Image (tube, rainbow over all chains, first blue to last red):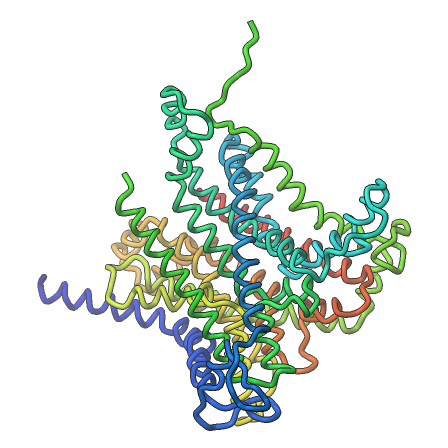
Length: 303
Length: 267
């Protein structure tokens, strides 16, 4: 490389940084930087009326799983916390599984439409995706609450004599999350299926594969990157869900997000809230790293 | 002889499932909209068609206030995030990959990777410290919080547009003695504009829809439309909430349709 070319490359890099600088400043100040403060807060002692006291303490981190006995100061496993973690993980996994089970046929259906109507079907999936999450949660609330559409209809048909209580249960949160996060599963699945070469199916059938074999041995392995992407896109926001469990769980069926909120409100335990936030962040980061690893492997080994 | 056609792409039950999914996806939304026209006081009983709840929502000062605030925040956040995202997109495309580019990508996409509740809590703590130290109040906190998480949404369509752009026009402009600024102003920017508008619209919708971060960052009396609705959901529900939701829904659909038309034209 000549000196002039080198100078030009250096100039180009400098411009790249300069142009990106304003965005980086805003993100540092209002997205990344605040996380550092959360790290600091998680190692401090709780203040009496919320906030913190400036004293080093590991109580916040210990409080994630353990609770101090008020009589003899021994630490016991905090059952309530374990229940909340278990509910969060269980509901997130269930949501991922259900959205995949119904999202895969939906994505397949869209991808196999004629080119012209495909855009329309895709648009129909995209509208709910961009619609306010709160509105969609409220819409589900309208369907499943005691006087809601589902119960009214079932009673009118004489199938049940009194309303089935779904609202404010784990089931309500599960249905709600599956409903609001479904487009996040369908869109990446569609992208993967759209690239799928349908001639492979003909080859499979020509070789006397059954439909199930074709699905299991040809389709699923090829669209695997889409499955992983969709699962991550559903699992991650489910685990950190706040609005849906709050509205449909009615404050009792808490998930991690609501539990964090509680520490900054009535719980008045900011260090615990900070430690819980970081725990959630760590789990999400691990999930994303696993995804990156799989996604890269698929692109390097495919074809 | 009539034979049953065998389509390789058809899998048993898939079409039925898909149709059920589409119905399940839209039925709750249609129900919500339908009940916004309910004349009855309760959300449970259908009392005939009426526009009353729209009038009531329109006349409700809290709703008006929250709507205005939502729009101020969304417009400000969209303008800020689109401006910085456009610059960042110009900085990270159309030049040789440079050291640190991955770092910039990770930073820009950070809001997509961190759970909202975590960012919300982090901002709550940080703004609390700033407010205590400086005594400065106001909507600026919410606006900048929104601007930050809107950046990746504004960035992605702009970058996509830049990557698909033909560089020869700019080279031609430079050959004709245009200054770099003239080239940008008269060649690059007009070509980039659909991407910029698309990015700004996504940022606007994302800001308008936000509940979690706003709920934690806002001070008393700074309700936006979504946080106002969240507060109302704890109380007795009236179809007024349905009316507000329907209006917000209509706005989203209009913006989205415009977005699709805008980004599709150049495919």
